[in-house]
Length: 528
Image (cartoon, rainbow, N blue to C red):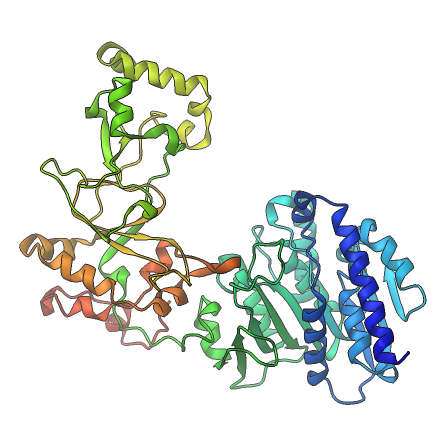
């Protein structure tokens, strides 16, 4: 049997062991502990790429802080010749995987420690760290552990990790103290750190403390882990200070060696860019001065009712229950029931559509409701019997059944969508000619005072603006939002607000055009 056949046989046996151990845990258990095994092909691709980053014939000291059953070590053995391997160390906290793995690798060069990596004293001798750290969300971490991890991570790397960060961020920071100077690290982690607020510290570490080499983001339509709804990335860096005029390679889709897209981005541009998932699809943002949606609209999420099935009723349900229409206001149905991107209104201002829904929204006190509307009072009592009034949102309102103030928005935007939507547009802008409000499946767009005055003088202006919004390319919208596994894209209000729309400004008289920060100070600020 050749060496290649031997390593292939060992990997086949290891993968079978992994599958057997996974089957003995529930999906919920593995989700809570963030245990998502690295597929064989991906592990080998990562180690082959790692070899290109190390000088030839370098003696390699390998570390995997979350080794599991050893998928990366197995790939390491198959890629690096024996004479190059100086040392291999792996940590595994869960004996369910660790104990069988110790037995499996007992005749190899791998030293496996059944221990919590975050408690170990570091030894900065490893020149190759490869890891798929546990993807444990912050709400599964105890407060005492969070505080301990924050202190140790800051001591190890200077990283000040937010309490909202997942455990994988701490693994990355703690590993800094184990790296030899000039060593290489490859981290297989969720790509969400590139966009979310808690990821700022990680990005600052990657730009300031080490030399960030390459970020490869996998196509979210090709989820790397079948049982983890996250989009993933491989982040490569060298433990050296970043050189001046440093550039980072961003790639997307395909494999590390054959990506679908590639772009080099300067470290300076990255330091000003809050959303790294723009790259490599989009170029570096233009300097400030280009009007964005925020210059013309205030954007808020639609109403969070506390229980849509209770507070939102059809016209037929309201009549069948004998409830008074005067305590209901029209509300748009979810986007899948809107076949057109324009909502027309009847003579009462209600949406002219087959599926007409209404939101219970009244500021009348219960005593008055009891006296005037017995059927509505009975409906509220039924809701209380189900504990609705004690739910978080309802309990924190002055009247548990009273809604937040959301006037009818003239334009709404869907905030969840798929990049492969049949229309080719993951998000939709909908012109709302009715008096309907919206629930939190939409983003509500309200013109700012200057634009509202212009629309009042010329009501046709809102339609022209809506048409401009629908001309925004999917790529522009996707570059501002965030993406999850399976190609699900999401736009938060601030992200939609960042989308450039210079065409809207041309519709306004010169004296009514917005004044932006760059114009006030004459500086070349990077658009955020």
